[in-house]
Length: 351
Ligand SMILES: Cc1ncc(COP(=O)(O)O)c(C=O)c1O
Image 1 (spheres, helix red, strand yellow):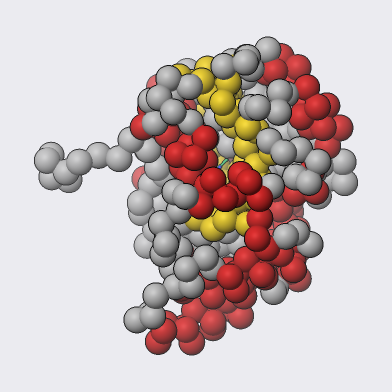
Image 2 (tube, rainbow, N blue to C red; image 1 turned 90 degrees about the vertical axis):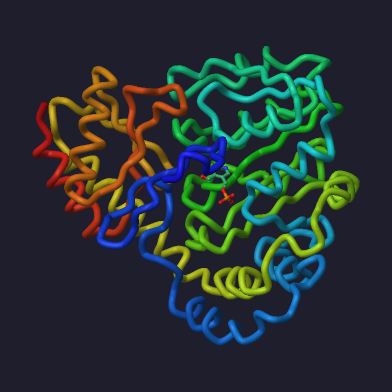
């Protein structure tokens, strides 16, 4: 790469995809279903036409799918952008924001961009107690970010814990519940939070089409909250922030809930397969309820060697050093054949 090329603060997964098994970016390796691909092909001819200003058609479809209010939805170029709009709308320089130490990297990157003071709760045990987390929240806290389940640690909270938490947080503090992986969770005691929005005026939910819906390359996500919050975020929404094609694809993918169910099943089956078959004394496996598992090594050198070894075997996984977890590697759950190959290669790994 040209050394004068400006660098993004976010360190993403590997770029490689041709000839590689990608297990580095928590994508859905089955790809979009047929009806979505057909729609994308059919609709490319409208690429000359600007998108709907406020994405009405997609917001209506989201509203129908989840029985929520269309005017309380805001679309973003990925949920990333919804998070950015929340920062823009609700913080000023010097404000405090709270999240966990091993949280999704963009919370911190935006904190720096918006000159906020990031208070990080040390969630070093991968699953933590919300009461402990709560202690980081003070009268100065403007926004709390909580991914449920969390990437990259997989920590997860269930409805009761969440409600208990929301009841304790001052209503002047915004709680952003990042539910990028919520569709993977089948446990009935889990809540994606959408139904809690009417009760909690300080709750914002963010959702993504990049994970189970398999549209990461099209950059589409959304946020949901009470109207006054969404209206504030709209002040910072670029008029044409999501593309026409992304909206068509997202609408079509919401209409294929049968495929979605199958994707959850595939993920569960392939994750269980991996946990059962991946057996190497150098690797400790940490399960999550999302579309990835975490591999723990005794030291960072072995973790790096493992990533390099997989790369040589045309598999990309994610070293978590940039998250402050140098002994850990995140492995996305791919297709059955992806996982067979990942298991085969991992079991051969030696130092
Ligand atoms: C917890 C979490 N939130 C948000 C995102 C952003 O997703 P997107 O902007 O693709 O919707 C990710 C992506 O990896 C994530 O892991």
